[in-house]
Length: 581
Image 1 (cartoon, one colour):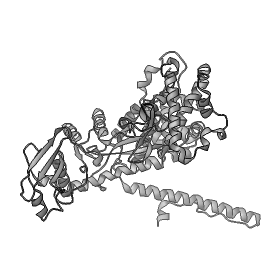
Image 2 (cartoon, rainbow, N blue to C red; image 1 turned 90 degrees about the vertical axis):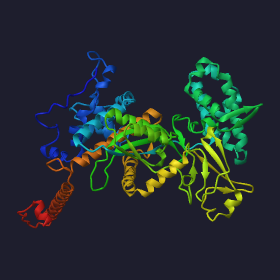
Image 3 (tube, helix red, strand yellow; image 1 turned 180 degrees about the vertical axis):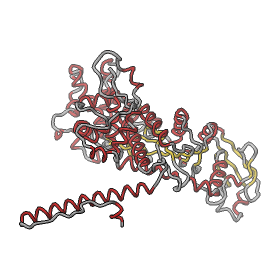
């Protein structure tokens, strides 16, 4: 039976068992107080009601408190056991989660609720984001987006180790589930891959010079096992056998009894990297294994206009997903939430004609530098081009083009010029036309003139360049997530578990930035830097007072043992103004 408190109804007394008024007053300055009053009551759990009975069954844990625990775990980068311990014994965390005196959490219950909430993280993110935006009333017209790779704590395997590990995993699962079927396998294969002691490994004696031969032998063993069980109904349903089948389809080819281990071009970016996490993929740009994180957040036009930089959209995708494919879906998500920006800042990885057209249809201006390197001298746009944009007529120096060979399947044209004229030209080194032994030729894509024109406009517009400088601020979000919130190397396995942890981290960043923004606001609800400086000085005064009292207590204790009478000072406390003066 679903259970959660109605926390939007204000309490008559803001008290908590075990804490005095001094404790509560100090908590009001911390993130725990803001989390309890500004985040926890607005976590939407109504979409979970279909999974629980309204009248029968044991009541669940307070769902808002459980979701809040996962957010606090990411904010303070706690392990699972540390989060459970904080839920049970940490008074500050218990206050933030609004727990009752008898609330308790065991390890099994923790993992049950985490597995139950998999797939619900986007609803949680949107409900908290909506509340924060309404409370802070920030400007959403300018936003920026970027992506990074969240690496996993997986071992980098060679092809030989990958093949051996995948086959061994299948044989062990088959041995534990279907012992009779396992006994049908050849004894040589069982002795190679199943052994009680690691020192008895058959491959331990493999020399580096025999690596390729050993790899082919292991591939033959995989093919033999695969052919034996590919028609077996029970064995074919095992997850480890599906990995074995995937390995055969992606990296093993057979031609006339000749076995080759080579990666299929169609599966190059999707190939199996580690059988312990089949969803994780290799990213060629970062040269690491993990999952891609795409973040969209608010920003301001300059540093003089403060902005809390809230994350408005977050997407988790496979590591080899291009940035171009993520931009359009991100804008669609923002449009559904009613958070569509007027201007989007992005790097050149998001630039494409299709993305510019789709964003323009939604009224969003995309500001990003064009793809590719700028030309050293003349560009294709400096040539005289036909009206259809597919043929060159004259070069920048006025020389006629002899011939244009169109290649529609490649969206490309090959243009030919007079070699003797080009060779005698003074701009031969600055021209994209290249000289060969018999001809002068240039091959160019049909979209290249538009790209060069956009690049020239981008470089000459100082206002656009000044605005584009704000895009780099999104890197601080990735730095915070990886340094403080545990996304440097995730310890989860599987796409769903990693996605849950990543989105919880995005929620944690929004909560932290809301807290930092609210403590800097003055009584009129306006952003003020002076209030933060004043609070910092008050904390320094408080620490100095504690230190002074501690030193005085040590002095009194020493005088007591030395039998020296000490008259306590009349002034034991002083105000902030006295300290500052």
